Length: 228
Image (cartoon, rainbow, N blue to C red):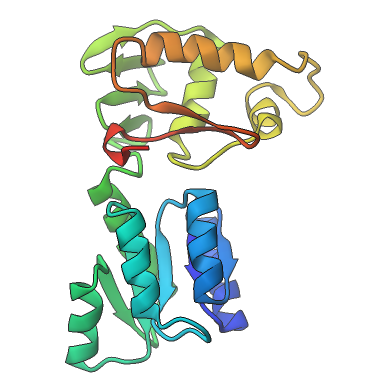
């Protein structure tokens, strides 16, 4: 979650809130840093302050929207006049919250934006993850894509569950090893590659790919509509 705000105290509060919601925060304090970060970290969404020390928030919004039309953007601003809200929304903001605001409201609005963009797994209940046409049931340990059952080994299932629980987030090999095996497990340098390759054969073969490699960083699962 890219957080763009030049107020350190507010940035810290937002970072804590999105972390507790299950997202990884990427805080930056100016518009140029925001544009660089958006290109590099593939954020779930952007929380964008309307008043920044270098570029105006609307300028940043328009550039973000030009480079990634599907990226959800929630604008935060102290300017609550109707014309300011109209300007932000007409420039490409998906939602608009004026200061002061509650962190709970920001998180709820972000969840709504992510669900609408297909970038966050929808939970049909507490044990089912859905991303696009891919469905994983933790209770029955069943996986389906486009209605077709997919047979996975125990570790393949755990790996897919980890990726689905953090859609679009790039996970490093070390993070995957730590969560799926354990930090003390020594399975060799190519263990993660082997399992990712196996998952791709079963999940993506003959279909639009959902599992992606970010060279030099790690792996991520993204909805097909993401287009990347």
